[in-house]
Length: 349
Image (cartoon, rainbow, N blue to C red; front, side, top):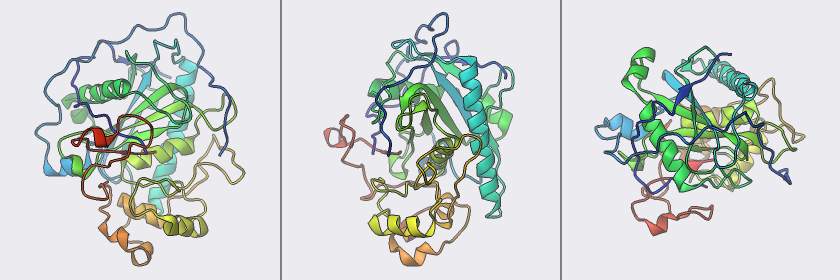
């Protein structure tokens, strides 16, 4: 389990630094890097402390965070992170590949939702020229990646600030919704993760985003993160819990995990890999089980409600702390919640 940063959300004037994009268990021994372009972009304008952008939220926003239910119209903004410190930047070919994988993941989400009688309305970067849903940003903090994806508080602070800046009235007017989430594409090898809002957070940590790495740290050198990984992380944004050992969700215990593995062997929240440990890149060969569908609000019931009583406390689309307050274990060697009683949240991986 990773932790949310302890710093307050920062608003930042990054219009010049956020540029529109043009059209168009295995261990690894080394970390590949993206090809260099002719010049690594200089860091974007530094975030400037200001009043929290999340003030004045409605009760519903405080409950769900910036992304609500999967069945609600939602805007997904892609932000490509260039690593000035490491000289790793995104090429147009690399961006095109991620767009293809994202499109595959979103299409799969639509198909899965239809099996539950639901129609989705997700807006995402499709490669259109000067798209408002595609940006680039060069942080001051270095990008780490690696097996634990132990990104620094400094980097996560910047990503929170970028999210606050990109959530504009113009964007909401264009797409007719205030439900928004961010996809940060990191140019290194790592284990992708998602920063979610908890109902206990209230006004804090409102903006929700997924950090998607260029390469899969558990795969062979140079193998990209798969569309299934994209889909898995996207589902976290809308309330889907991890259904594997080590899950940070209170109701996911050994009994439930064993049940899922036996009854829903292709459940995407249990694993994104194929049975032989490989990944698929032209399709997502997984399913959303009735259990996950219930957590997402795709259905109002599931067989597991009678089998696992703790599920009765789940509000679809909403994460809550097990004890009704902040978690106390960061689990990644970073800043621990015990060091800051006001620390509000954790994330799904």
